[in-house]
Length: 115
Image 1 (cartoon, helix red, strand yellow):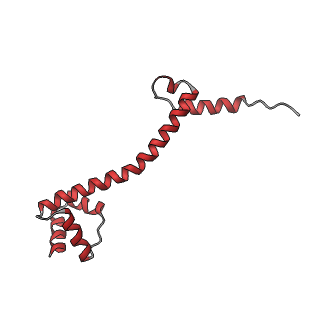
Image 2 (cartoon, one colour; image 1 turned 30 degrees about the vertical axis):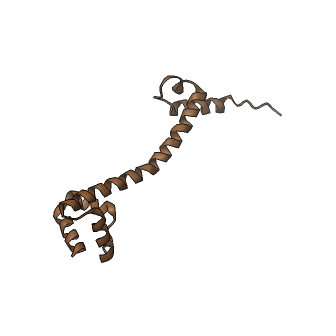
Image 3 (cartoon, one colour; image 1 turned 60 degrees about the vertical axis):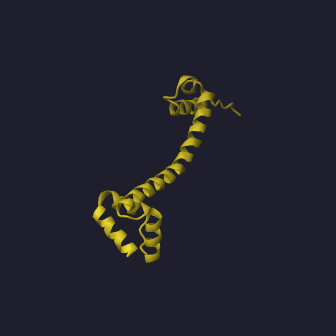
């Protein structure tokens, strides 16, 4: 049986790793082992931060709703409790958008919930 040499595929793999590591600093973009390690860490951090982004946005929505609620003489917690009791099912993302772009509509929602 003929000998199979893997040079083509090995080079292709190395090239792919180094291409993905392009722009990294120092040896991380030039040396295969450092590049592979860096890509593993970068992938892990990217996944973690994609999950974290959702939490950050929820916090931002809560802050926007809280500020708008203060302008309408109530607090965030009282508003959310009143909305739940009245059965008004607006999620925080939609509520924060309404608060930021249409303050009159948000004021009507607050009066409806607290009345």
